[in-house]
Length: 315
Image (tube, rainbow, N blue to C red):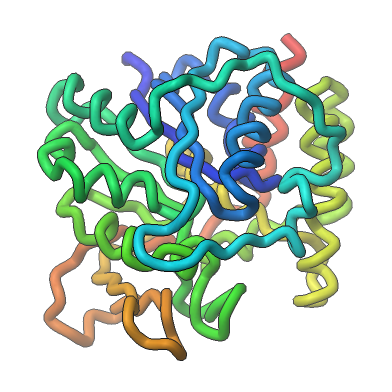
């Protein structure tokens, strides 16, 4: 079977970086048409550089990387250096990457690529604020014909919020874009905090990753050794959750996850609950189903997959 065509939209971030490694380890399953970057965990200038660094580390300078929107659709930008460090990928040494930055704006790339694609053949994988994709859909709704599915990292139900009392970071940064994406009419698989908080990068799991013994695995272990500091202090947990790689893991091994088709609505007006994702898990309203909400994962199976795929880079 031909590999699934994907566009990864990200804001690296250590967990985005691991998601990129996971995607690049699977050329038989995933054809990465391009990687688009957005302002999120750190400003756009850093997210595009960090993405290109990960391509270099993975030995994939052929990957096409596009810089996109430097602020949300309607709000002021929010960043998260207090979690990811000033570079966004603290834990590894920063360098000037060889992987080039494409001249085309990420939104233009998304629109042009989907316009040229056959119906239902491209999967969008947003792991940061959904500004690029929301903007592309608003500019040209006809591009949705080419979309097979959107697999996103964003939102929360039982876990509450991680940047505000009721909102997950990616949705809080640009709730208006998230509302567009979740209600675009195409199938959406949503990886929220409810599931990502189940895949903790414990010291034992990080040691297992380091034991793979190649450049990509070492970089992953180095980033996770920094990344876990904030969450272990905040939550008293054994490690930081690997949010963004859940999207790619679902593409590779959907059997690791449990999902339920629900309605998800985004709060876009309230100052108190801006960015809240109201997930109608028990179907208590008559709102139409618009997402496949992911609520459970085989965490050990997830890390088995990650370790196996990181070992691929040693070949």
